[in-house]
Length: 309
Image (tube, rainbow, N blue to C red):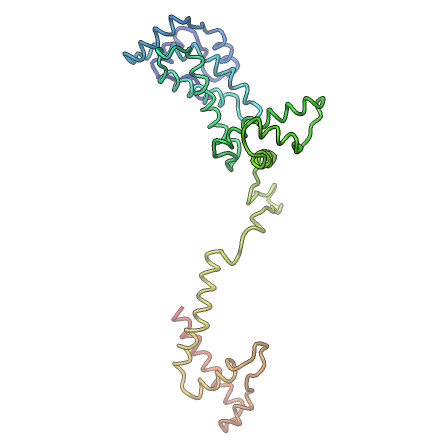
């Protein structure tokens, strides 16, 4: 686990040398250590805060941070229900604590514990929103408020029913939640739907080499929108119009007429083209001779189309 309480290399090494923290890496030992760290009196806190503000003394900052690490541990426990590692929650909360220490003004007349609470929760909230789901479930201020309060409010309704658990809130409960959080009932229903959903892999990996994986990508993908398919379709359309016309222009009149009558002047169902015998009678030659002219013309057109592609 990464260092949870880094204010600076100097402050951490100084504190550990005094035996206040165990070697980092054991979460239980860390929590036990911070619970036993001494609290600061009001006068000590004010003195250290002024020293940090006026001189930038890192030792003062370190003592302010270390004395409030137990607050971060306490706050982080409130967010264990989101399935994220406790150590990571503590780490993010400590980042918020260090930001609070850096901005704390001792002349405001409040204790650091009250001031830091907002910063600790803010960092933990950001971490949860970034990592709880691949797709963000809350982006606006109202949605964030819903995200972090809806679960606890639902648990409250369930406890009133002697522990009976229901998947969704009923209409009355939705209205109560909306009124309590000062949001619309539609927003409560939408957030509840988001919380109940989960991330789905679009392209899942087969469980074994012989298994077939089937995911949403199989039916969400549009073959007609695939880049190579689009390019090939455009090329076919161009060759079927401009390409064929250019290839026909390379033929002599008789060859062009035979190809046109045999293959181009036809109906949608494939009927209507002249037969070899009809063209043979028209030119006064054998049907085999017409076939030979047709084959030579088609070969010449094919070469012209390949060169143009």
